[in-house]
Amino acid sequence: MSTEQGRLARLDAAIYEIEKKFVGALMLVMGVVMFADVVHRVFSRAPGRLATMMAGVTGQPVEWIDRVVSPAVIGLFGLFIIYGAIRSRRAAMPAPTVLLRATLALIAAVALVQGFVRLVPEGVVWAPYFSLCLLLWVGLIGASMATYSGRHLALEMGEKIWPESWRDKVRSVSGVVAAGFAVLITVLGTMSLVDHFGIWLESPEANLIPSVDLPKWTVFWVVPYAFGIIALRYLGRATGLLPVKAPPSELDLVTNAEDPS
Image 1 (tube, rainbow, N blue to C red):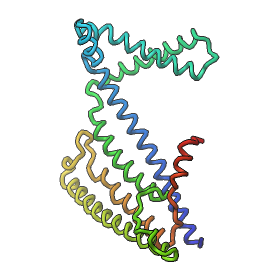
Image 2 (image 1 turned 90 degrees about the vertical axis):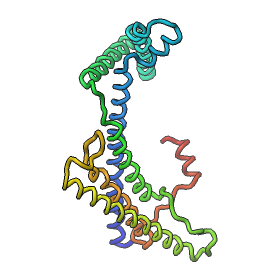
Image 3 (image 1 turned 180 degrees about the vertical axis):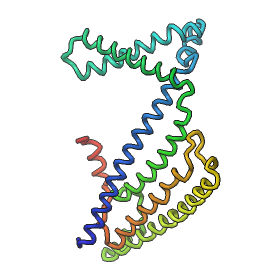
């Protein structure tokens, strides 16, 4: 590997590491936001689904079940789950101590949830659209990461039908063709981004993501970025400027799945 190839390879690896950390942070934020939305929807509903189901089975007033029976059932189930979690990690701890800790944890969780529901009565109404924006970023940047590691869907031009001496050239041609498609999407994505940005400049209150109120251009920038990086990686490998990343074999995937270490 030449000095120039080494520099490009290190730059590509650095971009990949930034992408990996960014995607990890996005997934964490997305999980927290959607969890908060689900918690609010479940615990702010009156009567709750559990109370409605129990009322249908027992014939008792749903309001009474929702006020008395349903909280007791949920509390006992939560105590059982927390007790089991603590017990599994502290097997030598005396049972009364585990029960006390589980009870205190349950009280803290109930206080946190009820405080959240009362402090934010309208709920996290922006969570679904916000999470969809993050999902777009995760998906496209993840595609760029997959291209780096050789796990992305590759364009195969019938490599097995060519003579062995031709296969490197065929791989290069397929990489150039794949890069061409990525460049096309990059151009189209850039044109769309410029249009969204122009509309936002003319009227900042227009062309916003619903509920989130973010300008669409702040979300769609990931399209030209991701496909631009994908195109550069395909071109770099097709021209030999970047090292070729061989995709993992089926045996490697099975071995990695069986061996978590």
